[in-house]
Image (cartoon, rainbow, N blue to C red; front, side):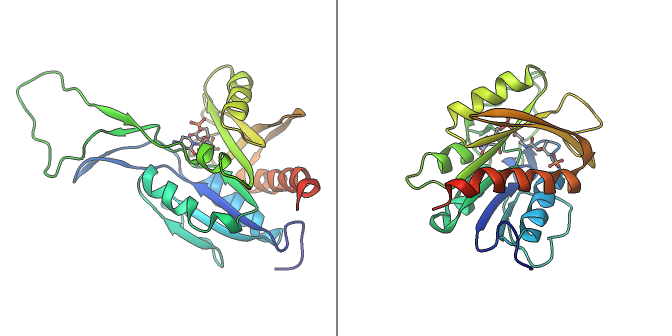
Length: 222
Ligand code: PMT
């Protein structure tokens, strides 16, 4: 890659959904396609960064010349995120991680019983981006906030609560942007302000987001 704004920097990006197994044939997941995270990986590489893409199960081909690690569950995504984190300058959490997983994974396929109602017991997953942001010498840490209402309010809450440097607020109540669509529109929120980036392709938006991240990060770079 030609020298760019992120030359010499290492960027970790999580992308896609996680799958939380119930039994050998069933899981809990969501509609994330990985498009946003993969576009960010591409844009960061184009800006000169060394990129590690940590991806949940998606149908996208692994991007050329980018180290891609595929995982299934939130716990696996956390492990892959912590591996080599000491070398990571910027961490971007675009994945839609399942907040909860079944308390136990059944060894055998769960049989249909006579009961009309079945209860599932779930336990909280580790919060990957918050774990990264709690580290000593943490990388510049960027989260996404996928919200269906009060988007900016909840995004600001997450920025503070998860100790992030930036959060990208994503209104996922609309069908034409957010989960699984080719386009997105977001608001970039930092501790000093907010800027809205209008609807465009995830590819173009990713380039704009990487510019924003590089601009915020560079003055802090050690
Ligand atoms: O994949 P696409 O189809 O292209 O869709 C893109 C997207 C809508 C999934 C993406 O733009 C997006 O908004 N990703 C974040 C989705 C999400 O789960 O947001 P959240 O508000 O629940 O989580 C807040 C932040 O914490 C996110 O950065 C998330 O990655 C992170 N998180 C959440 C839970 C958890 N256990 N670990 C985490 O790291």
